[in-house]
Amino acid sequence: MQTIVGVLRGGPSRKHEVSLKTGASMLEALPPERFFVRDIYIDRQGLWHDRGRPSTPERILRQLDVVLVGLHGEYGEDGEVQRLLERFGVPYAGTDSFGSYLAMHKLMAKMKARELGLQTPAFRYVESQDDLDAIAREVTRAFHQPVVIKPIGWGSSLGISIVGGYAPIREALFRLRTEGARSILIEEYVRGQEATTGVIEQIRGEALYVLPSVEIVPPSGDFFSYHSKYSGAAREIVPGHFRRVDAEELARAARLMHRGLGLRHYSRSDFMVTPRGIYYLETNTLPGLTRESLMPKALSAVGIALPDFVSHLVRLALREV
Image (cartoon, rainbow, N blue to C red):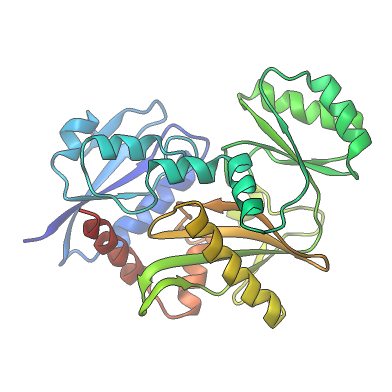
């Protein structure tokens, strides 16, 4: 009897289009002889659809054996949809609701990294009620310029600015607040080689298998922005041109963050490699699986085909039952 696998994609987040592509990759990769696949579309308003018809999560989920979450950003990576799946008792691949929330909240993830002994850029946390004018003045005095300004919980470099000076910092802060960011992180700008390292549980005889670190080379004059991630403008080198000691430390740090944040099944952590050491940036609990995404490129580099990886995620989810 075939296992009925529901693939959730779309969702009410700023990464709706990317989520559609990740979900499509999952749907295409699942071997039809082993799985009966259901394409579950969630629209921008949060309404669920099954076979093109609006429905309710309860009605859809009770017909599934297991779920693959192809969602990104809010609702998908912050633990919200995971809480829903847990409430209805449906096995699913990926991190549980608490671990998802912890990793998505950039401040909490940074504090966990520091607790585990990893370096992270110096930062200032901004809450919704804070005086943005005063904070812009404070940051201009206290931080080397430029600084990185990012919303808590958006992902994929959405909303990130690298700016210096009072007026640009103030403008970036007010723009994020206007766009709905409830809290903001201002970070020291760390220069170096950008790296990302994926880990997978229970594969190739290892409890936590580390994929080769990918070196990200953004286009000149840009950082690894949302546009450069999905337009193909950035160069992604697998394995990256890292010294052996740095490659080993990236692997150690990725394992450490996966375990330290209480993650499950797979994750991908981002770092900056500098002459002062390696800095932890953030962790993604649902890495993209589009053709432009980093995780499939790292999988390919070690000979793991996407159908084998996605099938492995289904097996991991069913083991949780």
